[in-house]
Image (cartoon, rainbow, N blue to C red; front, side, top):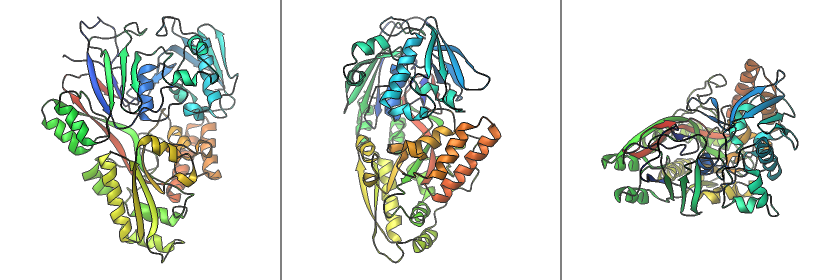
Length: 506
């Protein structure tokens, strides 16, 4: 097999070039592993990296994000923002078609947004208070207007989260729940790939639509098998048998080394804006005490994590350095057990022994388990009793829905789904976004909410940057999380694959 192209592999982090050219003379099939299940393929309900991995391949939106993080046209050929920034008008491509051959129209965009707002899950929280029923209107079959309920400076950058549905097809299968049951196992899209098969716990297979309206380049991949793996040994076995073509981005360094030494794989890296946190539940005892949260952060051996367990970049606060204008330059967090003991002594739990903490990580992810064991060893030296719990990802998302079931500490990767600092702050820290795996801190703090809302409402870049820096200062002071590192995405990739271009967000 010669060099192949892949449209968009993982959560927008990996993309392989599109172009125009001849059809392949034979089927090009690859197998990719992922360490967690696909929770949903319904564009109104997607929420995590595997959901976005499916969505990026199965659906198109009005616009997307390129490798530099810039907004680029997709179903829309162009757009204009009104002088007062209260409306945006999109012009659809005349050649845009759904997979059943019907044209993409402004009515489809209107329906997709109305359905998203009605279901009020997944990406809907991005538009809370910004878009309301009736906010999106069809000017003509190829023109759609978004009228914003209030000034929202990051609006354009959130547009890629809106995937466009074939409204006639969904309505024909709407049932009593706006098509949620049907779209749980079917697609109604204009995307480059079709859903071929899906067993939620084990695999998903997608196949290329040869009639995709944007065309295909030479070497396009015809079929992709995603396999759910629960341990590193399975990944190594799949590679040894010749079945694996490309690894997930969440393998241990040892697995990458093993695959590279086999001679068949190359390790391809890309810098991302994805942050790795220990999310600290601020409403559950004992992490409701800021001194306990600070003790946990000081008892974190950052150097060992970076150098040995999972190499990554520095993360000094909640926002990665890629957001340069809004980034608050801070000292790198340090491992200081004496300092941790001092913070424990300031807490309401001073003098107590075996203070209980529950730390949860994604089961089957070796490096997360190793970090958990390291944290357990350090924290138990200073007076805590740490219970480790490896949980499958779908279980993590379930327990995140309530304060009382959210662990004290959870290892979580979170990255921007659109190119704005707001993507890092609103979904994780705003009260209206509480109850998801991304917001396991449960801050529910009016001052934090106001800073986020004020930053969203201003069009003054300098004022917005100051608000974001003030917000970071407050979050760091509250010790909302322990800030571990930024992710350097790695894939072990068969040497037959070519054309990888990392996209740093979404």
